[in-house]
Image (cartoon, rainbow, N blue to C red; front, side):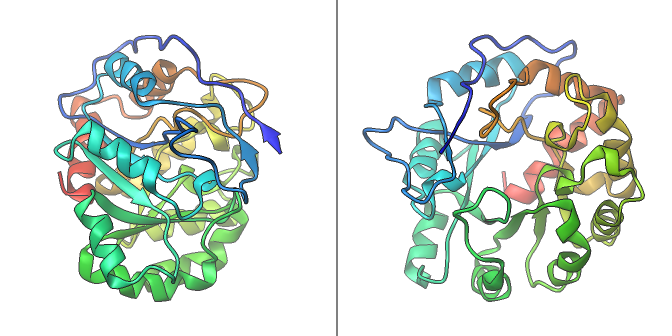
Length: 285
């Protein structure tokens, strides 16, 4: 089992101030493990990352709204993420859950009442819902107004993008499509992502450090982020990915990650769109 580093104890304050009602659209809560034990099918071993620690990060960054993403280490048991949403408050928190075809209509309605607004497919970290269930689950969540979020590798996107475009729900692509920066802007996967978001059929999360081939301070991500912002300014959102699970060699500074967004989106209007307006539309704030 792959061990993970803990998140940093201190969050540097960014060099610019996030606008009011800014939303962190991608982070996870792990534990406490006596209440929320990890799933036996997990592929990595995260250290506990609890609500008080995240709130310190949010305060340092100026985050007031949040979307908790169900991590693969909990499988389809969404209790930890749902508990976090209740503790944060439904006026400012949403959940992207993991479900499969065993969830009936009543179970989906219960998740909705507890703040769920999307379903995640994880084709990278393992222990996720099979991509074979994409179409069937999309049809079942459509009446709830939920979106479908996909975490995939860049090389999967050319084949996956037409399927995503045909779904009857909004689609969100994790981690800038998972295309490594050393593959270049013309990589088939990144071009498929640009076409998908540019067509208005998908959103993209500008959680960029995972696609970096150079590592901190992730300067190589900037051209990819700018290309996505130019292609679909109303469909780009941002997230920390705190506590940065499955990393074993280095740990990002969340204040520095927000600074990178400030470099990609230098205008006040563009920052507000990514951090406030776009998330409000997607998550129903």
